[in-house]
Image 1 (cartoon, helix red, strand yellow):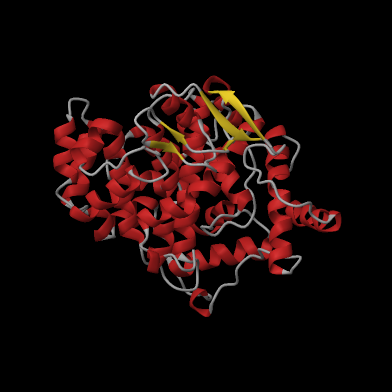
Image 2: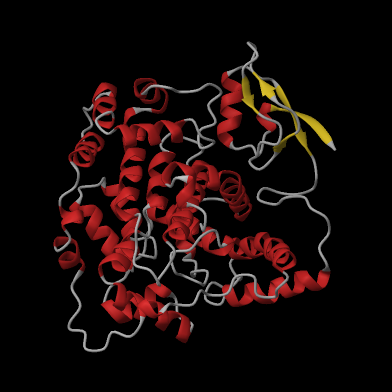
Length: 423
């Protein structure tokens, strides 16, 4: 069933039933597109009065499908209860997330013909015992001892300068990014992806800066630059492609949540990058301290613990603390540092928007189980973080829909096709 609505009636998660084009004939959005607030703004910009949408009774993040066997749905509920062991479903946001995930798990059970569609991965022998190990280093020592983390590529450092300098210009941003052809190509690929949904191709950095904004574009460049430092991790711990799939998904969920929390204002790029890099400290641990990291993974899986708590038990700190130290060393913007360092909670009352958005996005993606950085359980929700966003629990559906719609395309910006086969 289809219905025509005015652009002002568009709600995130609605699905287009026909192509939408501007007056000159250029395509703005194709049939089947899951709409967001950005689409509504784009249509208004090009004076599109109304659109035809599909009406199926499904909400944002839910795909209309044939009815599932009630017994399979009940099995999915039982399975999800184990995944939500620490999160629970008493908070309305968690109850909504549980509801969104139940049919996903049921479909996975049918597709994989198993009651356990996503068991915790086993560790290989390379992540074996580390008896005889001396005192473990501090976060500051870990960063200081790794030349790859201490001495950043020149272009990376200059991008940081542009981001932190309020007087930087569009030409400054384009000039710095253009110093690295690979970075420039990936950035243009991201600008031309579904992340923005521009109706025409953006083929130069200068035009990208003009359309997106110099600060937003350089922030995205920072995120792309960091990925290149962690393309390889020791075997036997986690799959690097799965880690980055989880990270990209968290960035997409964060940008969707931020778009709703701030009324669709500009600047969601920093939330995407914050989500993208939220587990960068865990990648440093896997690469620099693989055996203690294996011990933390074994502890979490053997004792049914949250991985961040197992990290604190093994290292005396967790990946969020290490990530904050690393980004501080790199002189990242303070908002990104806070988002990474505090996304599991600050230990004191009060949440700023960036950590709160990443905290909720991490819960959403862990519940969806899109990739993994090693955590099996859905982390517990800090209610104050959700309250800081001032969103309805139904807004989580938009985050789920955005991840489903865009994760594979955006992942291809960061990892070539031959690096994504097991993501």
